[in-house]
Length: 508
Image (cartoon, rainbow, N blue to C red; front, side, top):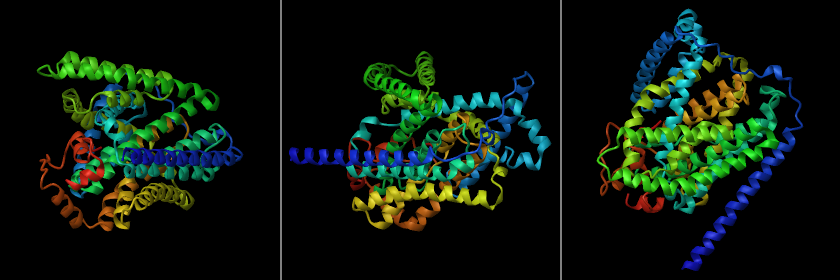
């Protein structure tokens, strides 16, 4: 039996190696064609406007802006929850509506007063802290050992949902590069970034959709959660590669990637065992005191600073530190309890507002621009849906359930906005392409729930969920459940997703 398992494991490893080797070969062929494309001069790429100096009076505008942003975000979030959409979609739209796309056009004087360009540096600083802490929480809620124990079918679906959209996005770069970029941006950076932006699945948003529909305990929900978690880890690794290439160039990227791999190894093999002991000692204390909280926040800042110094962006350091802290520890639960609401309610709306200031939908003008936008949506959806649903079908799923997993993996959201803002800051994408990709993130997230219920009726999903929950009833707080609980329900407690289906986050 053990020999059979070893044979299967070896065969699976060879298959995955062949898939990734083939994907690399296809991308190199795409790059070979792309580097020979003729592009306009550098003047056509719009870069973020220069940020003016911060004055004392700007602080008043920041207070007013945050008040307006939080109120609008919570209102639209509640509205979207009422129409059975993830609240984060409403909060994302709130940031865009308060920017030049709507408020700036309808009431330019009021917009210039409440959200002047001079406060952009302060909003950016607040939003960056929010994103760093949020990525720490996302990492904190991942169970890395459980990801390694996932069934072969789950891993293959997840990998297919990364490889297919990445290659389709890179291929789309052959068409978009001469039209929406210029010679200041290398085709390598442009195509890699576009491929990654197509590959993102928003694990927390997906968790919220499944929880709100109360289908997170079904086989479909458990596999979708596991695939999205693996996708997140893979996508952030790919993004780190893209950032290193964009910042260091093709030649110096090897040095940056080597340093990044060394830092990941340091965190996984040295810091993770050490933190496990420290966390075990803290768990024996009565409560998480302020000194321990200060120590962990200091660790977040230092880890973020380390990855920023390496050249792969500060969010990776925060995410990595969260991932190496035992997710099922009391420390992890208390940290989530202390930080989550403040980050989601106060800090992230600043990120949405800053993204809204950058998003100019008016740049997508004319039927040609809208056709390009539709092409982007089609390619992004086809890659995610086609890759994951086909992989599920090859693993023995029926067409309806395979299509459902493809629809769920097409969920994007806040994760996509984080990726897009990084690309915009690095000047890899123009303002026009940035607006198109933001709209794509909204569109693909909005269609998830209605398309899911079209393919698999709500009654069928609820019946399966009720059947699998008979022996495992966990109360939900108004549709909210922590991601650690969701991971446990999804089979991240050591069982495979298939086993989880037999027994039956505050998503963002």
